[in-house]
Length: 278
Length: 132
Image (cartoon, rainbow over all chains, first blue to last red; front, side, top):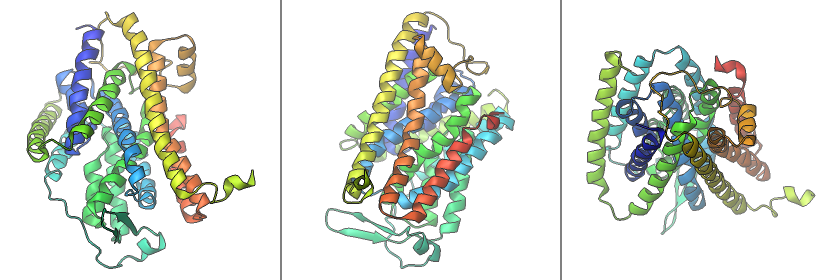
């Protein structure tokens, strides 16, 4: 296969990944690594570098639409960014010493977890009273607009959420993914924020977290322009197309199909990691 | 110049719009650079064989900012793509910097401080010693 054919096929693959990622809310990055390693037999280190860049592209691309709506809790995002960026740098540093087959196994586990998480019913956590002293001091409590009125919410268990975010950051730096599922877990289940706020805030954070580790990976030679070319353009176009389709598509069915595909890819990643093929 | 730092000049809404615009400009600039570099790269090397099976790291010049700029001057496709990638990485970082400015206008010094810590961590990751 020549570089031209390789680029065009990968462009198509990345387009599909970006579209499915934005339709299901799982992000384009999660499929890029199995696509590159299992289908195109790319070394996992190049795949990680490429996926990081793909997460920044989708995060920044869709964030420009979200900021206008005023749902993103910038204070909360910025505070938790301290945790995710330190985590991301630690993850990127640990990655050098980590055997690639272990990375593949961890990746597979996170992938399965993300697929399961996408099925969890979204609870729009309502105001449960002001319980966190720290949240008040850091002015993390906020409100978001709905067509009817402004809904205010409070943030709980700040320290727990902070450490979960640090873990999400480490995974992001180690595996090259946005780890949106882990971020949403920290915000929805631990800090009890309405999912509308947590989804957009997590999207805001993904770009910054990925940028922190991308800087390390770029200097380490993991980020290859030949792979970024089709993946960045494909994922961006796919995510854009997906957001236009979102209104009409039957997302529940699609999410089921996508989760099955992701779980299948995850099992393959774990198997190949276990047998030392990756 | 003094009026530049008053809230009346930069209402909070304006700075949010500015951030939204900056994100779009960043993504568009990056995509245009990747497309231009990509066309040059495919025109020159499209017939060759890709080699990503063995990890060797990218070739010299693609892993540092000075190397990338040098290659862009010589109109090398790969370096132009890589410059687009650098633009993409810079987009969220610039957004954080703009947020620091937004918090400063709101006189929210706690969050100016928090935002500067985040920027500090990112700058720390740029240090060459971390690359290993």
